[in-house]
Image 1 (cartoon, rainbow, N blue to C red):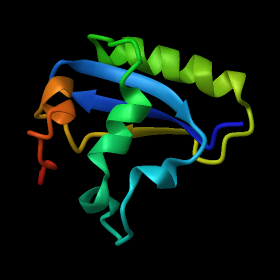
Image 2 (cartoon, one colour):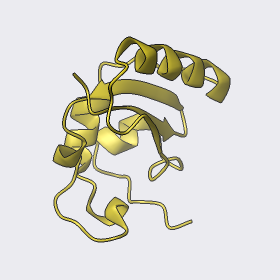
Image 3 (cartoon, rainbow, N blue to C red):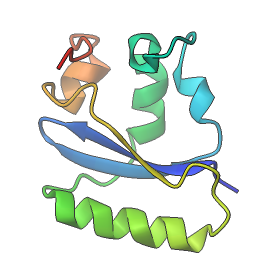
Length: 100
């Protein structure tokens, strides 16, 4: 059973996936966990996902996924750290985390 349903926002679209181990996306921990996102793990988790063009589309799918797994611990979470970069830039290691 997944821990939650996660949405990744990049400049080229929205991706959504259920994840069993959200903690594996991080290299460490601080209150601002985004500083420790492991981009290789993010790419692995979202790389095969369908790309949605609108927020409304991805939210609808995220809700359907979340309903399919009624006992998720985290619900639906949105990851905005790479919203200024394309998924390809993320894959190529050219993206840095957003600060705003």
